Image (cartoon, rainbow, N blue to C red; front, side, top):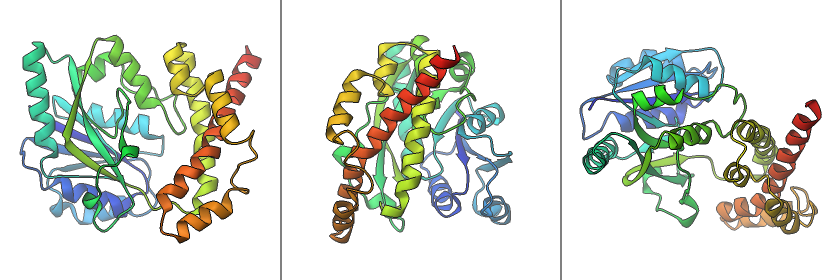
Length: 307
């Protein structure tokens, strides 16, 4: 089994360095790291080229900025491996990461009698840039997703058969879960692999992130409708929060939008001051989810209007 670790990256140089250094310390030797730079403007490409000797497993490809779906597709097309491992460029993995995926895949293939499966590792969120792998697993790190590109390993031919990622997802969100629906339809079995741990770094929550987070939720709403147009099922409606349940739930929790980024600012500021940015972020989810639900319905109304 030869692995190709496919990593799309866009303006993530400081954490990408940690990501790639961790991948050079693996207790497994049959692999390459395919980095697809999606038009970074922060010196990522120049830095990688001038430090190429530090990263013998890395093959770098450069593209104009077209988004993560197109970058991952290009990475799969260029990959030499029979097995693809997807991670994001802000993920720092342990030294047994690749070995754990391989062992779980081999075991599952033996039991199933085929390679009709993929492994899904554990992702732990952390704001600790200096020592990301020191973060413990938390309840908020649990994921019920079937296929998410933060940490999966899958035979390359299944990705090709499913048709790779849909590049119609130009904005944030859903392109991996949509591919997951197609993989599920092909009969692929999800194998949990908690030993393959990746630490997903993002900076500690602060109030100045809120405008960007709201924009992300609105983008997710729009892309959710693209997802639903391709797969108009109740399951997808639940995933993208386009149901009366979500409308009532987040409408009530946000008091119809009265609890928003302005009215909740003092509460969030106080929690951050007390050294509880994660709790402040959970408070923000009240209005962020309401923005997401509103975004979904606005985008769906637009689509209906066009038809």
